[in-house]
Structure formats: structure tokens, C-alpha cells
Amino acid sequence: MQPPHDDHPHVPGPSLWPVGFAIGVVVLLVGLIVSWYIAVVGAILALVFGFLWVRDLAAGTALTQAEEVAPETSAAPRVDDAGLPPEDPAERYPRNKFLEFSTIGLGAVIGGIVAAPALGFMVAPAFLKQGEKDIDIGPLSDYPEGKFIVTTFTSVPRQGVVSRRTAFVRYNGPLNGLPSFTIISNHCAHLGCPVQPNTKVPDKHILFKDVTLIPLPTPPSGFSCPCHGGAYDIEGNRTAGPPVRALDRYSFSIRNGHLFLEAPFSVARVDGTGGTARIHKYAFSYPGEHIDGPESWLYPIQPPH
Ligand code: FES
Image (cartoon, rainbow, N blue to C red):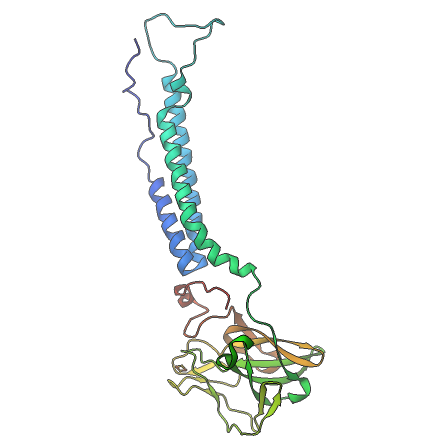
């Protein structure tokens, strides 16, 4: 007769590892919405505690098996034709082990189903070619050195006039043998109102295709926003008012003697001036968003614009 097995538990003792694992998963999911840094911390917590949990489960299962394979009995042991005790099918795959691993596996499948679409929507766009074509804003000869040109162009031709944008373009002269430009967006970094140069803007303009170029006869002292009093210096650094960062800028390239606008990017601040300025550059972000420092952790990851 088989002795009762109640003396030995079939599961490991209580452990805090599952709690740590759950906290790690929660931090990971919150981080996917709030910030990559928090997501990485959550992933590390989940991995570490998950590893410790599984290790405990495995150790507990091994202990249970070791104690169960040699039950005490006074009856003569059963042997097979080879003189060996027959294997007990129930002992080869204990029920507790099956339940533990099936629970973990089911949890992993559910977690994967929930997380995969979110990750896909966040990560995949970064690997896809998005955005619009670069914009030809005219020959270099239209941009005299040291002068700001108010340049208005259509950013998305298929959208027409609603996509008209303005940039303040200044040729800084050659730098390391290449033309250097400062190209500042006129979108206020507070709520996106159009900022104005702090100088008289003449009516006289030049046309290149549908691009309008207005050379400023006198250099502006900076830029101002009429909506809530935001103010910026000549490099686009915030100097007063509610904006949370400097004005955005455009990347550029020179092709066949023409200046092309490429993707915009956001700027925390600019040290120095002109071609030698050090630009603290970040991925393009919506107005009002902090892009550096702890405040930036409060803003969700943005898909490419
Ligand atoms: S939108 Fe420019 S200061 Fe508010």
C-alpha cells in the first residue's frame, strides 16, 4: 500500500519573487507609454525577478521529486523483466509541475499578445521611411551671408496651402569648406503659434517656384510670439514667456547649388552663434513638450512626424 505523501509539500514555499516580477511588468508597461528609460528599468526588474522565481520553482520541483521517488513500504518491491522497478507515469511529469509551467506559459502568451501590437506601433515606424520629400527653397545666391531670409514654402504639396510653413534662414558663410546655414522654424515652442522676427518685415519678396523669400533689411534682435508673449534670442533660445525650449530647426542639404530643407528637429538650447554654435538637438517633438531633463520623462514617445 502506498504511504500518504502529505508530509512533503508539492510546491515551493512562499516567495516574494512573483511580486517583484509583477512590479517589473507593471513598470515596463507604464514605461512603454511614458519613457523608454522607465521601460528598460521595468524590463530589467521583470527579467531578474522572473529568473529568480523560475529558479525557485525548479529547485522546489526537484526537491519534491527527490523525496517522492523513494517511498517507504514494507511490501516487496515490484520489478520488471530486467529486474528494475517499473516507472510510475505520474512521477515522470508531476501535476504540480505541469500546472506551474502551464500557468507561466499562459501568462507569457497573454503578455506577448498584449505587448506585441503596442511595441509594433511604437517601434516599427522608426524603421520605415516616413515624412515628405525634401523641399528645394532656391539657389544659394538668394541667401546672402549674415542676412535672415523669411522663407515660406509648401511642406506637403498634396495638402496644398494648409501645409504652408515658414522658416528663418540665415547663411553663416562657409564652415570647413561647406556652406553653413541656420534654419529656424517659426512654430512657437509653447503652443505652436507663428513667431515673428523682432524687426520690420518688408513687403518686397522674391519668388522661387512657390517659395516666397523675404530678405530682412536689418537683422532682428530675436523672435517674439504674439500669442502668450514667448520670446527667443537670435539663435532661437527661449529668453522669456511660457515656451519650454528653443525654437525647432530644419536639417538641410545642398544639391546642385540649391538649398534643400530636410526633416525638422527640436532643440533644447543653442550655445554660441552662427556656424560654430553647439546645437542641443533632439527628435522632433510637439510644442509644449520638454525634451531634456526629468520633465521630458513625463511625455510619451512620439511616432515620427
Ligand atoms: S504659443 Fe507662443 S507663447 Fe504661447
